[in-house]
Structure formats: structure tokens, C-alpha cells
Length: 192
Image (cartoon, rainbow, N blue to C red; front, side):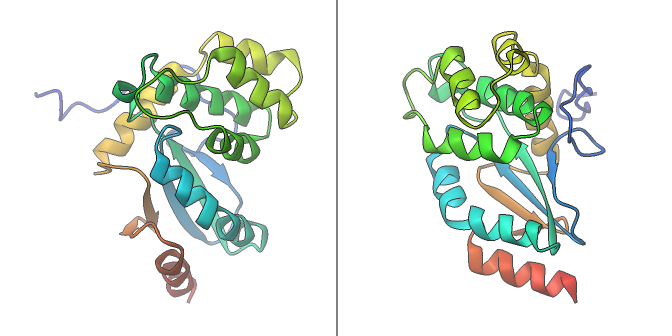
């Protein structure tokens, strides 16, 4: 059996709020599922979050959709310190604290440039504090890299699903262009 055919092994620790398969963080409980694959170092993902994020959150808050975020560690080679993996892992810590969406938005707002060092673990922990994750558990989780194996699992599972770049969006498991108009139309069609 080739390594490509081998299934990613489920990590021992999966964040609170994870999907049944453990490879994403579930936000909302609407009837239409939107899978969003992002990397916190990806500038296109930041742009996607800035433009589509408010509408996705409105769909969740309006009970129209469930959004499953898959924070990938796709761009580790574009940082000096495996930033994509560390940021993905820290988002798992934020999910444990009930603030995944707020933390993800803050990570994009504070996104370091590709090609250099990413944010330090102290900076990742501070971003959490700024979004309300001010207890000691979040900082310990970030500094311990508690979800690094989960970040690798999310990435491997995404690649098994055919995700080859970020951002990637699926509506009811059907790939759609990562733009607001197409996503909105696909959600409306799936809701009929």
C-alpha cells in the first residue's frame, strides 16, 4: 500500500466542538453544511474571511447553515517556524475555550507575512487573551502545542478529500468557488 492510500490516523486529542470525523470545528446547527478549508498564513484566506466571514456568520446565526472550519497546516514551508501548524493547533485550543470564530478572525487580522517567522506562541496566547480566552488553560494549551497532531490530521483529511489549496469551500460536499455570491447561491439551492 502506498502512503497516499493510507488513511490519516485520528489524533488522541480532538478539540471541543469538532465534527464527528474530528477534522473540523463545527459552528452552528443549520440544515446546509458549508465546509471552509483555510490556512491562517494564507493571504487569500484572510481576504476570504474579511469578505465572506460576516455573511457566513449571519447564515449561522439565522439558522440557515452550519459552517465547519478546517484550519489546515498547508503553508508551513512558507514560514521559518511551522506557523501554519502552530496557528491551527492554537485554534483548537480556542475551540476548547468556546471562542474559535473570534480567535480565527483575530488570527487573520494579525496575520504575519509569508516567508518569515510567524507569530510566537506568546503572541498566539495574547491574541486569545484579547478575544476573551484569558484563563490559564488557553495559554498552557498553546504553549504545549496540544493540538499539533490534530492540525496534521485536519490537513491530511482535507488532502484526502481533494483539497489542494486554500481557501476551499464545499456546500453540501460540492466544491464551489470561494466567493460570496457563489456560496450564497449554493446555500439557497441546497435549502430548497
